[in-house]
Image (cartoon, rainbow, N blue to C red; front, top):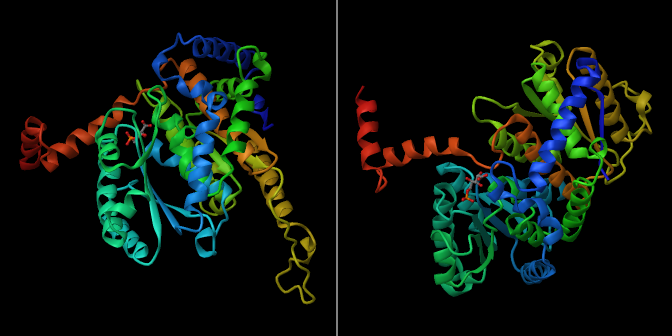
Length: 446
Ligand code: PA5
């Protein structure tokens, strides 16, 4: 199991204050499990791991066998919750340089997560010389970025291998009945998977949204689900609140927030976790940032960012705290070699594992930052494997829901993300937005 260390927050709070927030976390947990809190029609993620149908995992395994050695790349098209979870888990588990190595499993690459003309152009150039398939993910089936990327890549694939063959290489993951992507999947006979109605985008990585592309790329999705299921069991209503890790973390971040710590930095010491932090930022930012409230979720990759952000973190404004994802064991062994001349002065660490050097950097940074006024929450996982990733994903999903309830917001909606879309559609002259287009024109004239 992953473990949680809150020892380095107590210097910044009173114990009784933490207990008050912990009992608030207990109340929030009840709201969640009894489906009596805000947004309770979006709680499908809560029991998703234990309810994962073996038939679904078998179907994904079957597809993985079919695609193995058939295609070099799998382009995953999606944005936000239909993108970040897959990228987070894929990057954490796959080889750091997988694109540069021969592989029997298709390598994941991504599209539809931006509107960059140059990104898409470059991608088409790469795909010109590769065999590839497409997994297109959109719950609504109407999001502009993935719809645009899919139109381009679908046409590219059809031109390369023909319409019939490309139908076998395209998989759609979308709503069971609504949206343009569902219609297209049905008309074009794509194989498709359903995103449950009651699972919102940022809570969907353990649904077909993440399981299909991850399984096809060789991630052990059985272990991912096993880890998540165990975390679900260990964070249920029957678990004492002071042993319930997501509830404890939710209480800790909220007590710090009440003390003016308005920014939370998710810290990692493994570059493979960079996109895990991006996923986490969406999870917490979109769930809590409403009604003029919410901790601002930010992230840093250490030790890289200690050489850019280290000064600010040590001595800048004291309105932040850190949550460190600490990985105990490396996947591989690599020692610092000795050198007869020792011109670089590194012989004092020769024969030590590089991982130990990294660990000492982690410990040294923790002590320095706490000393400098930055509270520290530490979440430790034995290894970066599918099982522990499953635990981490579920841990943060549950903590986020509890935390949102402590804050008093609906953690499952995102009304604020529509504003830019309305303006963009009006500016582009989308049918149905004529009134807004007129308003935009007046703004532009001014
Ligand atoms: O969390 C969310 O709801 C969003 O990030 C969505 O996942 C994102 O906007 C993509 O939406 P869709 O899957 O409908 O294309």
